[in-house]
Length: 226
Image 1 (cartoon, rainbow, N blue to C red):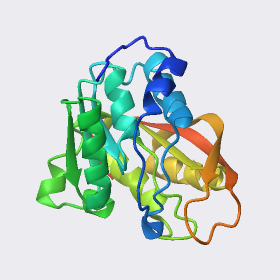
Image 2 (cartoon, rainbow, N blue to C red):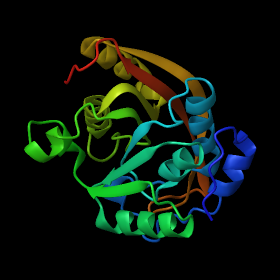
Image 3 (tube, rainbow, N blue to C red):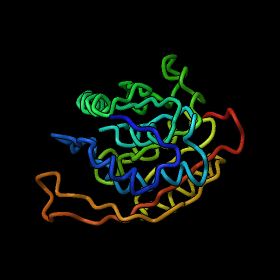
Image 4 (cartoon, rainbow, N blue to C red):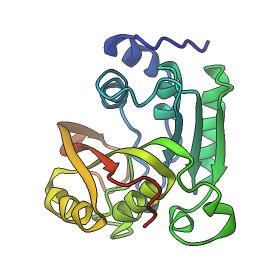
């Protein structure tokens, strides 16, 4: 059952998010690693309690996957959420999760992130329509090199305020340089440990801890598109 509590404690939110179903058959080319309930709760609670970027806000979840960030954002009072993903199977899993949590203020859209970078009429209708964009994009270090930057560019196009994202700590300097070239403000809010479970056949270890940065980007000038 859906529950909206704008003042929900982080541990309570994390407990609810444990019930979100993950990918049954994750796709390696899309780097479909689910966001853990702990990381999702840390991200969303910071967005809500520190920056007030969720309550009554219009939110986009780019690369929505199974929907854990959309569900958590709604629980913390987001007025509307649009989840966007290129993968129809992921969208089906997300839809099922939304039904289980009885979320009616979340819509889903199938789209490649690269379609959100150009002047396509359908995607341009979304530009600057969202207060907040939240995402856990592909790292882009083994597959789809540069996709992490494409996600950031698309997110900045969609948002009129702030973008929250996760990136490998090893790419921090690259992200900071990109943010400077885009003339947006960027802050590393936290360094987190991403417990990457043994998901694909090539994984040899049961799990691997990856150092990731939780970052916030915000526009200096309203209405600027990349």
